[in-house]
Length: 376
Ligand SMILES: Nc1nc2c(ncn2[C@@H]2O[C@H](COP(=O)(O)OP(=O)(O)OP(=O)(O)O)[C@@H](O)[C@H]2O)c(=O)[nH]1
Ligand SMILES: [Mg+2]
Image 1 (cartoon, protein in one colour):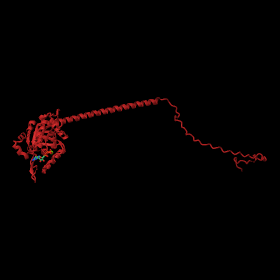
Image 2 (cartoon, rainbow, N blue to C red; image 1 turned 135 degrees about the vertical axis):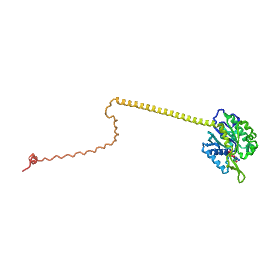
Image 3 (cartoon, rainbow, N blue to C red; image 1 turned 90 degrees about the vertical axis):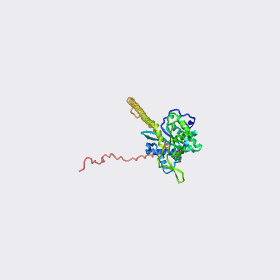
Image 4 (cartoon, rainbow, N blue to C red; image 1 turned 60 degrees about the vertical axis):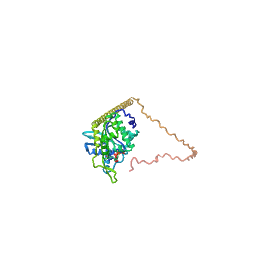
């Protein structure tokens, strides 16, 4: 991305960039936010044959909220941060994508006057590198009666911006529309200079000198009325004047090319998606092939192991059937002290039986047995 210094050192980037957006440039208080909100609201309603639809809900909501504020007679606060959204623009059957960008005017000054970098200023310059058409918003009141510092933004900053654009790749063909803002208030000023072109040529001659071909429009986003204190407050009873003309001018020159670019982008995105899907399929096929190979290798190893085990079991030596269990070792016996044997008492001498008379044989005294029969 080029830095803001690039605009001053005048060495725009060499590679050709895709120019796909309509960009609005303007200093602080040039009227960018009011211009954008009123233009969007008018086109959203389909007024003036132009239709716009923001891709980002935030941008649509911002525009509608600002318009509501204006309806209530309040000016929007100064823009604090950049907000950017793609907008689909349809006009005379042409459809183009435009980048709507609202940013603090300070960023414009940083980028094109101070020549200093900064993320937002670099981003703005990058948008200019990609611009297919540019609308410059210039407040005639500032050019006519602003302080020297304020006039520098339009007199020097704008010239820097168009010079950078014209010297960047493809920049010579970019259509430039200059919108003089707040012409409800400054109509006398513009008329006295001979009209919009006369005003620019007399007040900012360097703009046409460096910018070359450009179309200049007198515009008014709102009219004003005095409030109770006589201060100008917005009055939205009238339709905006000239806003859509500036955009139509851009569409006329780049609408067809941008529509073609949008179609090409869609086609490229579709091709990318197809390529990604094909790559995904190839990866999946390779993975599944690898899984099958792994599976069959594992199965082969398993089969070999089974065969080896089977052969081993079939051909091993028959073993004796005795138990091969290791002998069970008895636990070491406890050493029990053997008791000392008690002294055996000396046997008493058995007295010699006294001699008795021989009783004779006892057979005859036996009772007859009863087993053989009963006595009568
Ligand atoms: N009479 C008149 N005054 C306008 C119109 N548009 C804007 N103004 C005045 O200009 C002031 C600045 O308008 P903005 O749209 O906020 O300007 P800006 O360029 O967004 O300013 P920054 O956000 O500070 O960069 C407003 O507060 C109004 O006082 C217009 O169409 N007619
Ligand atoms: Mg603003």
